[in-house]
Length: 174
Image (cartoon, rainbow, N blue to C red; front, side):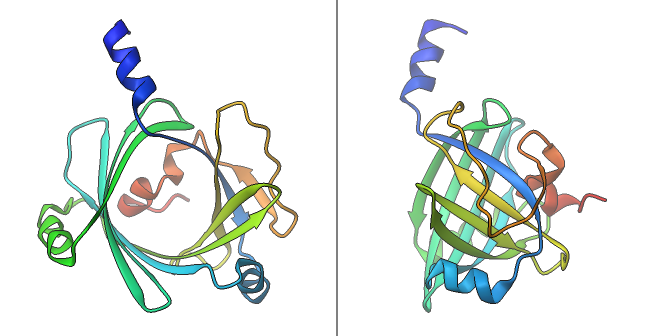
């Protein structure tokens, strides 16, 4: 890597995240733990260049919808450069014209639970009744983390490309 590339990467906004496949949780308990921090999310992936994941998202919480445009560049399984901007509804609808025809729009309900110094995001999908995702953003790749006791982890899928939302938009894993 050239010195200029290293400098650009060090200045870029990073998303460092671990992801777990979990057994479908008790939704009533999850709603209590989230204390109202629950969102309905619709995200559509856009046609983009290789190595780049680009999407638009409509996130509704308490009757208010926020629209975002997001671009991620994968650095490794756990770390990505992430650029995200809030956009108007009109810009969101305009960007939808670039939807990747190979992907379906992903619908999910996200519960955010603060526990153990982290915000745990639990995503429930309408196409799964037996499993869900648990994600946590971390300050660094070597931050130790233990999933909270209110979920049952099937396995970590941070390194499994079949379990990215972008991959789910194309095909559900077996």
